[in-house]
Length: 141
Image (tube, rainbow, N blue to C red):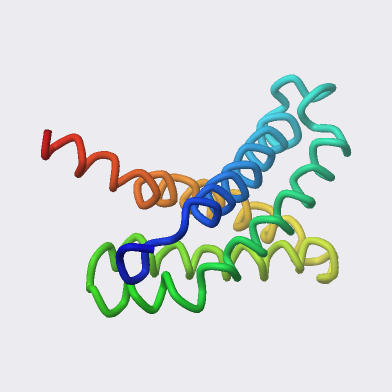
């Protein structure tokens, strides 16, 4: 690692692929189950199971950046809005995901809506945060 807080390539790849897999499978299930687009293909238990497995990997990826990347980002005062909003959204996604499985039936519909709305917000900010380095590199050349 050449810079404080800069993730090694393996970790950056793990985080990007973990979060992208979780987001993409979640979006596929959202399209199939909630919006009835290709429901027979996208709204299946297999897609939901893939999303659950991807969420576990994304959680591991999040855990791998907590000790150093977030601390270094805080100290550098760069990308605070995207970094900390992602952290808040991920906490909301973990809680709402747990409530979808273990929460009371009475709140399920609200939790479903909260989960997918927060998920889409997270995905948008993750893309901006993860690829901002590419944008700034292109501006220099």
